[in-house]
Amino acid sequence: MDGENPLEARVTQWAAWLEHRGWARFAVPWLAVLRVWGFVGAQVLWMLSPFSPSDRLPILAAALEQPDLWEALQHRLVEGGAPR
Image (cartoon, rainbow, N blue to C red; front, side, top):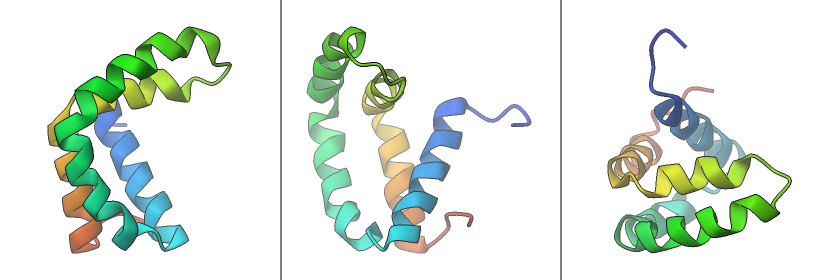
C-alpha cells in the first residue's frame, strides 16, 4: 500500500463499494451521524467482536473511533473521488 494508512485504504475501498452499488447518495447523510455517534458505536462493536467470526467488526470499530476518516469518506462520495 506504499505506506498508506490501512484505515484510509479501507475507507477508499468502502467509497468504491458504496459508489459501485449506487448507495453513495444514501450513505452521505448517515456519515454525519457516524461522526457524532461513532465513538459509542465503536465501543459496542469492540464488545461484540470476540463473538463474531468475521474480522470486519474490529476494522469498523477502529474506523468509528476516527471521525476524520468518516469525513474523508463523505468527501470522496460527494466529490466522486473514489477509485474504481
